[in-house]
Image 1: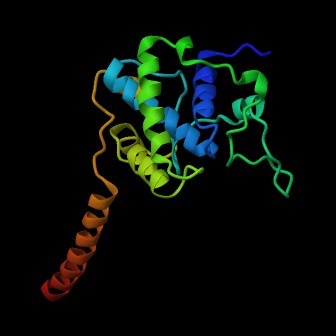
Image 2 (image 1 turned 180 degrees about the vertical axis):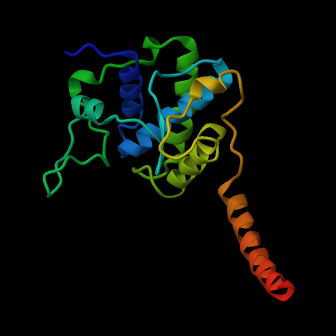
Amino acid sequence: MLEINDNEKKVLYILQKFKDKSISILVLIKLLYCCELKSISKNKKRFTTYNFKHYKFGPFINLYDTVNTYCNLDIKENGDLDYNDLHNIKDIYKTINISEFNKEDQEILNEVVEKWHKACSTGKFSGNTLDGLMNYVYMTPPLFETNYDEIIDLDSYIGQTIDKIYLSKTQLRSIKKKANKYSDLFDEISKVLQ
């Protein structure tokens, strides 16, 4: 059996918690990011040593090698590995227990992973639950304040409350709707003034 580092143990623990639900690699990454936000806010320290990047689908880290090592992945028709269903961990690695983590990390894992696991009403992490997770990771300060394609400097947020969202999806839709309405009005006024 391979020696498993602390980051990988946390990945495996999350995967074990979702053994009854289908999650993708992108969802796994977002769950780790949620743990980071909660740990920085609550414990004033990083949860992992991963360097998250602002990516087109939110915060991103390359977990493909980790997942390839620890999971039995299905092969798609085109021969690629299927990263949309990660619940099938190799039997030899199904031994990660919450007691292997320090008390602070146990609390973060319990709080974050349980919250999102309970939110999955079906056997898949999708629909409103996925929308809620994406809204959460996009609308928190670190991602919101980091330029696209740059590393998110989570260390600079230590000691700050960063696990609260700026705007909900509903609020954002309302702002966009009003902006469009007033944008049209502004265009009309500008034409008259010219």
